[in-house]
Length: 302
Image (tube, rainbow, N blue to C red; front, side, top):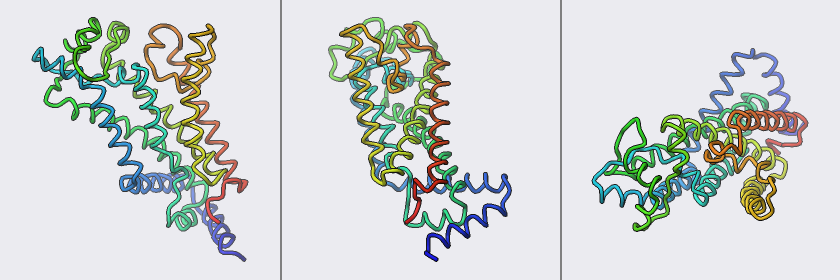
């Protein structure tokens, strides 16, 4: 009997002896170990580096306005970052880079799978994808605070700097930088509502990107998933241009265009509907991953 068959036989016996509570605890351990391992990966530090770089590029002109007026900048730029067009694509590429190495196989993965069980290991990795996207949103929010120093200010409202930049875009045009502030978002939402909705959309879409990447990479045994996701982002942008030229609505079919909260304010999308669709896509991808692993289509070890 081969080494792989012996390990899978032992794993199946272990699965039968464990209850659901133990399986869930094991899955949480797998997710926790994966998060610990991720903090030492090159891709994770690459995401952090580009996060700070993009925030610096985005906030430079807004900080110029704050310096000139002597006011603080409230840390509610996240919705405006994803409403800015170009930076929305950068944000999507960060979400892709975050899980580009799915299914996250390491040198000790075979033994971890044997110890926990294939399905428990996969469940842990899916929990890890979801948790990683939550952590990344916290990093994305906190990193803007660091970049905004020493102009960061705390308020329940949008604040004079963001309000001025939204109502009078020319006020920041004289400073170098690429940031923009959406007037429609400031008029329609409170800062807490806008930031919370933006984070939730990013977490759900990032998790969908992660499980799709997991599925494709697992089938192909290459990093094809992240390449396909990047291509899909560019295709979504192309569909947006097609809509403007020919009056079509193809871009609405792409989840990669759902991050812009302006589209919900303008009535182009329904927020709850898109969240449900993202949850459904996530669930379907999880089912496909589990079926592929169980059917040995995705081989977790050779």
